[in-house]
Amino acid sequence: MKRLFKIYRHVLYFFALPIFVSSFFRPAVGKEYDVGFWKKISLVRSFRKTIRSIPSASDWLEHLAMAERILLIPRSVEGGVIECGAYKGASTANLSRACVLTGRTLYVADSFEGLPEPVEEDRYHLQEVKGKHKEYRKGDYAGAFEEVKQNIRRHGDIQCCEFIRGYYENTLAGLKDKKLVFVFLDVDLNDSLKTCCKYLWVGLEGGCFLFSHEAQDLAFVSHFFNQAWWQEHLKTDAPGFIGAGTGLPLGIAYGSAIGYTVKK
Ligand SMILES: C[S@@+](CC[C@H](N)C(=O)[O-])C[C@H]1O[C@@H](n2cnc3c(N)ncnc32)[C@H](O)[C@@H]1O
Image 1: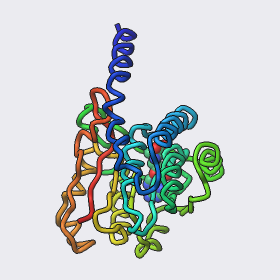
Image 2: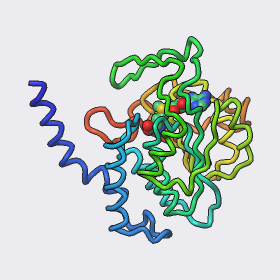
Image 3: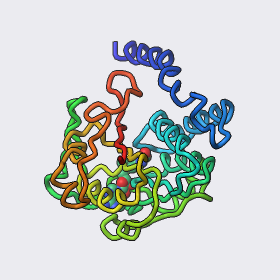
């Protein structure tokens, strides 16, 4: 029965795939960067290959949704792309392909030693939509620096990458004034999220996107609605979050883990 259900889901996925990727194939996506249909096909193939080759905490469709956004940023808007949370470099490799096509620097920020020790209230997270608890421990999702670089060399383009190595608390303050056009946070812990927002939001250009891979974690995304925190730390209104609780509709049954907010 379990096997039958698995086959059923594969069949569903096969037929749903054209719907999931249809937005990426819109002519407007990549137009400014001369990224047409065949380049997009090649991106899709390489994204899928990356995910099969490198252990990843995210899915290629999620990477594609982010690549779409990067390809839509007008050339006239200057700034780099940042990923916080690389693990083994799968999402990094795929994002680097979009960055090369658009001539953007990809800042890759990670401890390269995995998660820091979570404070007690950050140790267990509930994914409401799946009804599942997840426990986080120090060192989870560790990807060694050389291993990550090697994975990016094999499956992405390391030329556009600048690495920011260490815990965010010690490294991201230096980026406070850096112009950014796209932020991807896949950092698991609420504490890490707050540090990232504190230091990266100011540099994010107006109209640009911040994606998070914790969309299904309500405690996590509630941060984007916490008016008091945003007023205290960034003197601005809480931006809200698209996909809070379920993520963007990119998967069968459980949606996806990805969602975003836009800087006004
Ligand atoms: C779930 S993994 C990232 C998964 C990756 N994006 C992928 O798709 O495979 C979380 C990453 O966040 C990093 N991380 C979380 N909090 C951090 C912090 N405070 N400082 C530095 N790195 C941190 C961990 O080292 C880990 O690589």
